[in-house]
Amino acid sequence: MHTETSPSTAVYLLTGRESDLAPLDKQLVVFGFETTVFDHATALLAAMHGKPPFAVILDAQTEGLDLEFHVPLIKRLSKGPLFLSSTGESVSRQIALLRLGITDFVARPLPLQKLVARLDELLDQRRPEPFRVLVVDDSEAMLHWLHKVLHGAGMEVFKTRSPLDVLLMMDRHRPEIVILDVYMPECSGNEMAHIIRQQPRFDGIPIIFFSTEVSRNKQLVARSMGGDDFLVKDTPPEDLVAAVTITCERYRRLRQWMTRDSLTLLLNHTTLVEHLDQSIQTCARNGDHLTFAMIDIDHFKSVNDEYGHLTGDYVIQSLARILRHTAPGQALIGRYGGEEFGVALPGIAPVLASRFIDAVRLQFCAFPQNGNNSTFHASFSAGVSTLTPGLTTQQLMENADLALYQAKRNGRNQVVLYNEAEHARQEHGSHAR
Ligand SMILES: Nc1nc2c(ncn2[C@@H]2O[C@H](COP(=O)(O)OP(=O)(O)OP(=O)(O)O)[C@@H](O)[C@H]2O)c(=O)[nH]1
Image: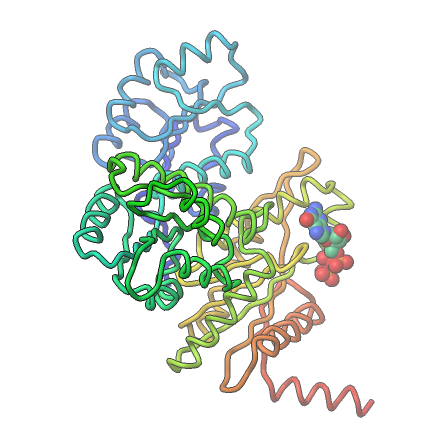
């Protein structure tokens, strides 16, 4: 399980020792950024020579920092984001600083959540996932050409000559676009599009027809069968790449709205349960471990009452980020509802899973939350359940919920691993009373 940050998340912070920015290093570490603090620009530049960071944050008030001199030197060593934190700059000064190479301005007092959100966004932009494209054409030469053009543009391309394999390949590779030839011997592209559109699990996946057909009328018929666009086969490669890119980007944005929770960008409830379902089937088939944790922030109503709803939202976001940054790659993390989260850990033994959730609990407790111009700490309780033969998704979640209830009853701020025998004993005890 990886809980370390990769070197690519290195953030260099230039600030004075006594500055209000100094605690930022510990705060960013909680969110998974490997932060190093420098109190002199020369030391920062020397470190950048050795290992260029992902981002640099400059405190404008650092002693000896001369923006006109140092910013161009920093830019020469790293093309990454360069933040300037100051008490406020005039618009004309901001323009001058942008020209020098500053990419983002951060006002004081530092809005930590916004800064982290921005760093997250920049990080995601830096490692965009390649678009996944499925191409279906009975001509080997055409498949080869499409693969060459799209793969050459950085996309992940899956190809088949047989339309009868399409559904299977869509299940296996989860393409974000399907490019269909219109005239194929086994079935036409129109028919294939019609069949794809009958499957609710492929709802919304764009289909582009790729054909020699130039008749506007026939193109419209093809689109009425479920296609989204029509490209003729002598389309120049750059136009094909542009059309696929635009369509995939739109689909990704749409999917994000459909599958993600807007406050935390974690999976929403429905999608988490759907993915958990699939994961349970796979793990049950392969005999792999699967654990599920239900996490609930403690006394959250009091947080809202004392610090306001907005601060409550920040607390929810801080837990979401800690989970995102520390969970192993295969984890499914979702916002289950309000201040409740669900985390599925396929392939991870129950004891290790509990240990991981407990490590998240400690990080979350240690994280300084800001509200009413002061710092406070929040905590959560969690219940962890394990997949056993024959258990349904619903039962797995209910068991985690029972363990969570136990954690709350035990006094909160703890992780309880569901134990069937223990649960039966307690049930029996409560009935006997
Ligand atoms: N800020 C914020 N509050 C929310 C959100 N969703 C739910 N809540 C609040 O979360 C609170 C949940 O409170 P309760 O279910 O009573 O539980 P609790 O106060 O956390 O207490 P315990 O779970 O028993 O430790 C309610 O006051 C909801 O209004 C949200 O998206 N943002």
